Structures are given as C-alpha cells and as structure tokens.
Image (cartoon, rainbow, N blue to C red):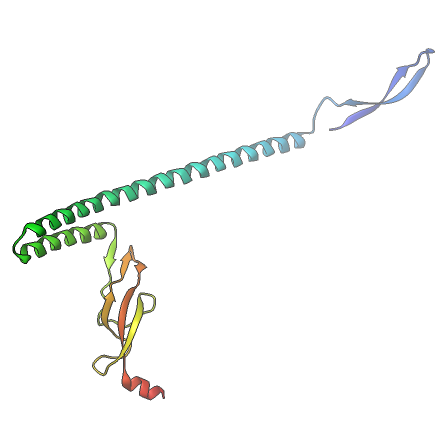
Length: 182
C-alpha cells in the first residue's frame, strides 16, 4: 500500500511548517487485491476438500458396516440350518438322512462364499508355489515329481483373485533330485 508523505500544517504562531504525516493513498495495488482473493479461494478450497474427505470416510465406514451385516444375515441362515440339522440328527434313526442334511447346509455355506467371490483353491497334484501354499511336510517319493503337492491338509482360499488363506499342503520330495544335488 502506497502512502503520501509530507503535508503542510500551521503552527501556533501562524507560520507554516512542513510535517511528516502518513496519509493512505486512495487506490490499492491491483496485485495485492488479486493475491488476497487467491488466498481466500485457496482457504475455501482447502475447507471444501477437508469436508469432502471426512464425508467420504464416513460413507465408506457405513458401506463396510452394511456389507458385513449382509454377510452375517446369510451366515445366520446357515447357522439356523445347522441347528435344525442337529435337532433332526438327535431324532433320526438312520445316518444317511443326517449326512444328507449336513451336506445341504455345507452347499448353502459354499454358495454364500461363491457369491462373495471366495473360491477354494484346487492344488492337489499341482506344483508347490510359496505364494499360494504353505508346506507342512515334505515326503520323499519316487511316485511323484519333486515339488508336487500330494496332500492338502487345510484348503486355501482366494477372494476376487487374491489369496486370503494359503493352502497347507504336503509336498513330494524326489529322492533322485536330492541325490543329484549331493
């Protein structure tokens, strides 16, 4: 802001005296005004972005709560069917009907997993891959090629092409291969 200086004033004895007083200029620099407007706009944009971010986080939390609630409702149906199967099993005289009922509930459970994008990994006979499998044991075998999965101790699962649980497996260790390494 520019100021005009130096103004004439009268003294008490009637003489004019020059004084140093600061008087603001009538017009402001246009660049200063533009800078002030840009700063104000920046502050408003920051506040809007912060509000948007907070709103997005809240919406995401609500969505996750709803998604978990939906899956839980499906799993409660499976639990109800298991409970009915147990009551029927206590009254039934033949094991085949009990097995059939449990198989139906197991199929219902698997369909829920499929609907949510969860798939059981088929790995027996496949080559061992540490990104997909966890080796529980190595068994020496000439019947199977080395590093081949010969038994699945606990199945692995993928959800939307991402491993969510590694398969726990038994892996063949070829004796001929280990003899060559020596």
